[in-house]
Length: 592
View 1 (cartoon, helix red, strand yellow):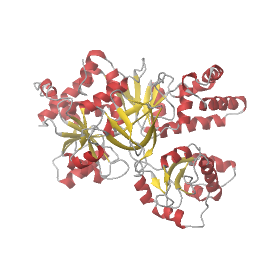
View 2: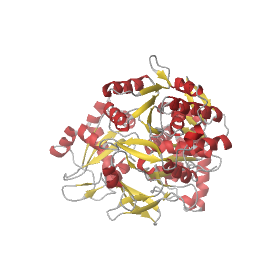
View 3: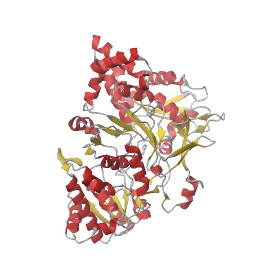
View 4: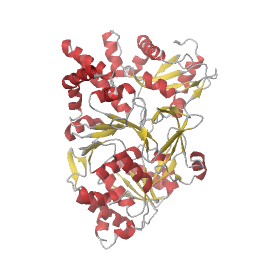
């Protein structure tokens, strides 16, 4: 059957992919698997329960939960009866929660646990709303989602086909609020057709035999959500990691054929592998770094020649095979998005037969615009790949990336002014990113249009390019380059405290806390050395002249990062005003 609305995936699964593990999540340390038939039955009963409560086509129903099978069942239960699903990040602040509930006029919300129930209940009381809240976990005094499923079971006479038939491909599927790195949340309106086009055209990137995936990126974000729809489209079983802390154990338990990830996680995996290699001695250590250096020189499609490929075959057998085993042994492809992937990481993972397909897109584009593929002519290092089928990409005169196609949103909810600013009269969506087309087909992102700044000398600086280069240092965990209207660029740096502690121990420098580490003169000089090493690749006006070290990692919970792990630059600037003042007004500080 043709899939024209996202919930058509359910009938496709019923007809073609009868499985005992359509989706699975951990409960009390053990996997709880949902078969295709059970998943579909729960979904249908939930739809009937919503209808019995009076939910109508176009009404807004929210889900605020971490990744778990109940999220998917609720999602399909909402959309197949014509309602609009509003995903809410579990880490949202109270102000954003109230704004979304009020702006979207949410009628019902599903939440996973006690803290999220309390968060929404608090918002409900402040707004004096008649919002109904259902919980996935059993919580005293709260309505449980099973009550709604039972209500639907009691109303079997409701003909769901009549409701499904009323939904068209152009109807609103979901309303996703995104504030990005600045500003008030904006409701992105995505239709069934937006997501279906992305699912169908992205699915061709997956290799034959890909039948089991692990999921841990937030379903509240369109990236993971679209990929989950694609897994269902391809008949891939989905297993949810228990938590971010258990990912490695879950990978080795599930042995998936792949997963989606963000560069930051791949950077950590790479750093851990290199750290273990550094602990080896003698011949084993030499072999490890021989293989690693070989991998860092990797070129696609055998362009390094037969002698290189012969050496790589040996490296794969004796060294890289252990990398693959650490990721379960069955990886066919990983997909990376959300931020720029360092080309050196892409090279070494591809060399190790763990291909990483880097893509690019935004919530407003459902999300994929371009992606690298597995096969000849489909990938190029340092780029985010080719546009999807039916998606057109062009570069504006000022370098901004413009996109047009069936994946582009309907607009911003209740904000025709913002919609008109973002989608021009020709239907091109203005991404706000700066880029170029390599060989006329591969897209390379250079920076965010809004993040490029001009120094007092009138020179433009693209901070992301510098940041990605500095993060190649094993001593730099996170970095933000700044310098708008200042004499020179500078940087706020969160060091890799684990690596610095090891370095301090070797140098016999006594330190006990992160606060001590960042104040130690030898440590500061070491980070300056690292920065200066990478500075050499940039023009004099771009080079970072001064730095300040920070004592704690930037996190989503701390407010410094978005859910897709992009820096909230304005928040970080406001939070560190005193340090920035010190950088630019204190003449005594070291300058590179």
